[in-house]
Length: 413
Image 1: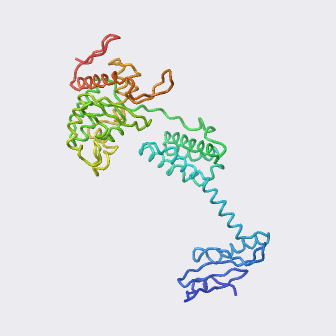
Image 2: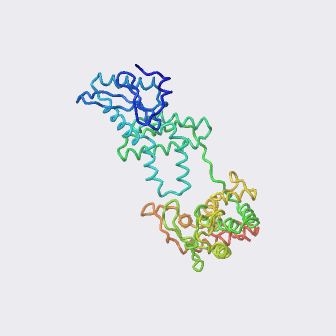
Image 3: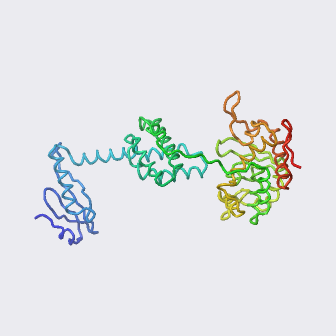
């Protein structure tokens, strides 16, 4: 007699496993622990031997659903196909598709491309993919994705008003596709077809003052900061060194030679060795801070608030700016000191842009091509860093800035 839903539900386990038969090879196996497992018994077309196919477990798979799966298996048998072999083939195909899904290829790209990037950049790209890309196309085989598929998810971002993020997303997706092409996981990159499809984004320059009088005002504000010595020194040191804020907060005592007036480290963006000549003002600030953090186990100059084994938070300097009433959207951001230095060193102090660019650890094109040498212009850079520190000191003191005739350096009186 065929089973009923009530009988399946009410049947209790026994000391030993037993079976309840339905029809056409379908039966329910009940284990001593109470598990109810649907099974389908059939004869293999190729050998005539008995085969057994698992169809799910109750109650996740109801009697009606189990019968439907049995009927699908019967249709395969009538066509001369072994349902067990068909299931194995389907499982292999799903596994292969999963290995070649956009998410899988993107995971390999991230492991390869992001391994040497900064933690902040890695986290940014990872969050972007997980939040705005994988939910829509992550499971799709990368070979089957088309330009309209990608445009659809980008339009979702545009509807949320995050136009710049949509452009970044398109760039990242393109990099994943090109990685897939290079590794024979797909034949084409559909993203070039979307060039011009997104709403244009107006480029926003980093907030940074170039008026010497304004610069002096910010420097005086940093001196008045009421907070920890670490943050105050970071505020005062960043304009002197004009390095990337992330490199400053990850400064280590082992990389600093106060006697020689040098800081040596690896540039986060280009992974090149770099030398920063420390002015007497910078040495004085670090000397003041050394008794506070120089003995701590992590070796960081600017120690994290929660653990001495971690550096200062990447938000600490920006938060200090806001406490001082500085609008980091329209007035000044910590990274903006690089732009301030680049502008004023050239326009006010008449330094050669090549010298400035080397101090910024940028690659500079020369007769040998795009290159960077950590020791190039080192003597001129050492002099420049001291002149720069003295210049900032005069601006902070509120001196009048007078532009001298071309060919001579500006002076602050």
